[in-house]
Image 1 (cartoon, rainbow, N blue to C red):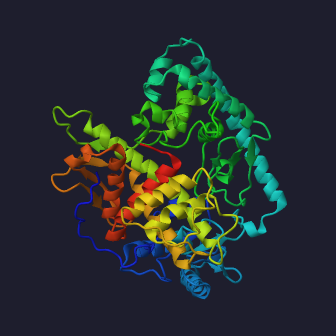
Image 2 (cartoon, rainbow, N blue to C red):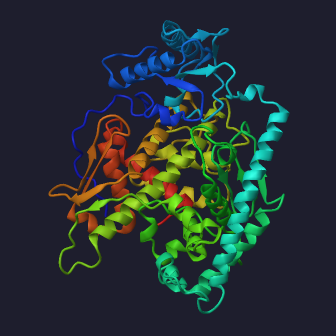
Image 3 (cartoon, rainbow, N blue to C red):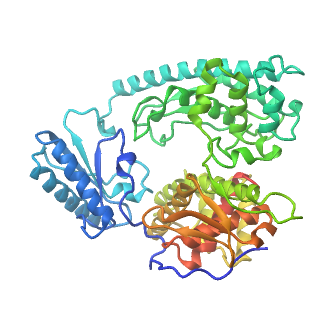
Length: 563
């Protein structure tokens, strides 16, 4: 059963993939970076009648006043959807606007401003590229074009020092936790909670003997990760290294600049968070004993800080990375500062649930709603996380399909999304053999729901790249809304609703579910949550609402997220 009742009347933009509005929260987005000032799409001035643009001009004027008399260099940019000549001219006009404000306040512009059209860092983020960067002369801001071998070596030494300290604490915590897991009875049941209570909360209905071999694998892998071949430190200019840490089953844990450089790209990771990151990525890297092909112990179904984490079923928790990490932290108690790490990671948003379960109806409507919203967050997390790889694969394939990208994640995403958003694609024949049947079955299924797969082509088109940026934007904004608290209530009529809101992400915090929602399967409930969100977004065309539902569902099937 699917719910597709009449859509609410919204003002829709003519271009369903256009990324508009000035970068929200610019101070947060650029923390730890050189100052950067943002513009609307195809704009080179700040319009007073647009509040976000007027606020950005005021921010620029305030910065200029605070830096009067200082020497700066300017770097102008534009997002990638325009032609090179258009973008260069637009970037220059943006530089001129910023320069006028700076000079008027006594800031000194050194040399000739640069126009950067390299799109070297996450080019899918169009709002971020519509900007002028202001680099104070003599500051610590380092451009990668001038990054030396000595600086690379210094970064890697800093990374190793940060990793060594975090790994030592992680080993202490893991050993304290496994020492309580191995015996038939908890050797130190006090203070509360005792071991078995903790396991029942984290892995409801799963026996200790079932869980123990997986924990043993994590402990073994953690020891291996500490060796020179078990982890890899990367310098700040290393390509494809935006996250603090990452790992895949059986491969070394990679550590990137955010892990060890305070304030890098707006993020500062505490010593406690580094310990968590080492434990979390090690769990990704650990292998389920006896699995063939090798299967990682955990994937990210629900992070500890999400609303879904405390509502997982036992079989779901058995595959969830943070279920292992948080169990070890809880069992370690004070060892290695485990309690401080748990506090640092935090818990899910404080939602307000106002649903009432009718007498005689099995289950709890509030828990059902929590799980549906939580799984929507899980699906959207991967949809937003993998969409940049889709964008990069398309960008590399405008002349011919990128040989290095075929069978990689970007190609998989393109085959999932091609029928939904009418994108050029190379076909499923060259996909990874494990993914090919999943994606082929998905394409056949959505064809039956009105999304036929286009014919294969020899290369991507520029409009495919622009569409990929728009898709990433919509998924990212849906995910952003789910990171905050919600108010969940009953819909008196219709099939439910999600509140709209001005600005970005464009979604409010009030959600209403109709009675019919609770008769749907768990997967259909999750799909309907995403449907309500897409329907409420003013820049998602009515005809594309279902495309976003199917796209998120396709990603969930590819990753195996559940429900």
